[in-house]
Image (tube, rainbow, N blue to C red; front, side, top):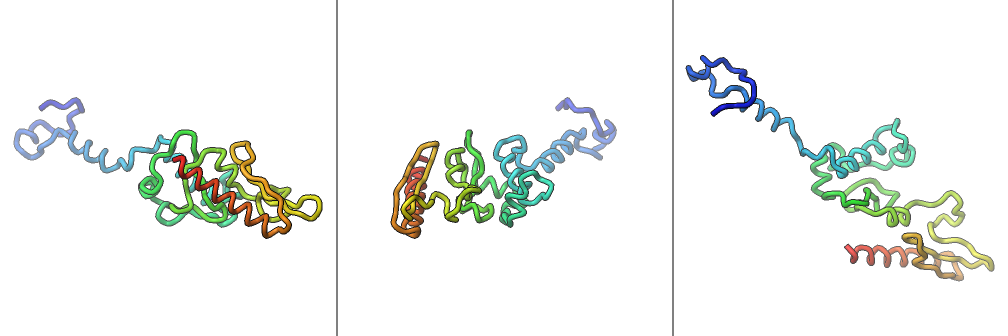
Length: 185
């Protein structure tokens, strides 16, 4: 059998049985041993790398919103793209990695691939929020409004006599939206 690679072994070593290969077998085995998952140029790998950077690297531009606030990557994903990929699968087009509960870190049960609309609904409090609860604000007359926007549309809006009722209405609306989005998948 002829080999297209340059011969690394002396021909006498091959004919005398000292060597059984021209060197291409060793090169092939070394290449295979040094190749991990073969996905380093995929969007899934990019998401994994970015997640780790924003949680672990104080020099990352968005570290202040993640690692500095105690958001961590779970041990299973920290040093293993393969584990991350096993849990999350391929990143669908038009999505990014999203945490369901933004106060918790990155782990299988708290992460999903989300479109920008779902992520914007899932963000934390805006700087002008005075109630302390996203989607709840005081309205004239001492009443409380619960609202939820998704994909630039109002999904829920209701007015309540108490703050607690408005908070419950907002949480119920979030759960209903999450169920509806899950059923769409």
